[in-house]
Length: 208
Image (tube, rainbow, N blue to C red; front, side, top):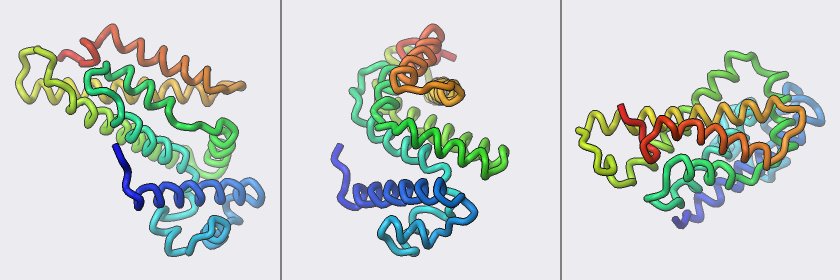
């Protein structure tokens, strides 16, 4: 699926702001860093900064937001007839993770923000992740021959999508808590988490 030039520019700007913020945050702390400094380091105006982020603190979640955007694009590119757990696994691992940056921003986040705000934001990202999975599932042949009405079909999609999101975020949480992190470890944890769902799924669909 081709992306517009505007979308590509927007992604590049957000990534430039994310990287500039991380450098500043690590060098002088979050509270001593201003949005003006981040914008200047990224080579954009303050107005452009606020088109992408409502505050500098939003950049403490930019790793999740960037990953979700990448995930949506990667998921949309998967074959329609592929099992949803496999599509999700491949899409999650398509993101070019910078393990060091992920660890650094997680440390900054936990040291700067209260736990309630962190949990609230991550739950929001998980809900958006589930929505992306549900949207992807609606492209597939309806119900795979199962005799279900529209309500049952919607329930199946919603429950499956939320279970898949919970499995992936659970795997990422376990990965983040490990002392040693690597992409192969993340891949294995995601594979195991998604495989654990398949016993309760019918070809990638929860049967109510």
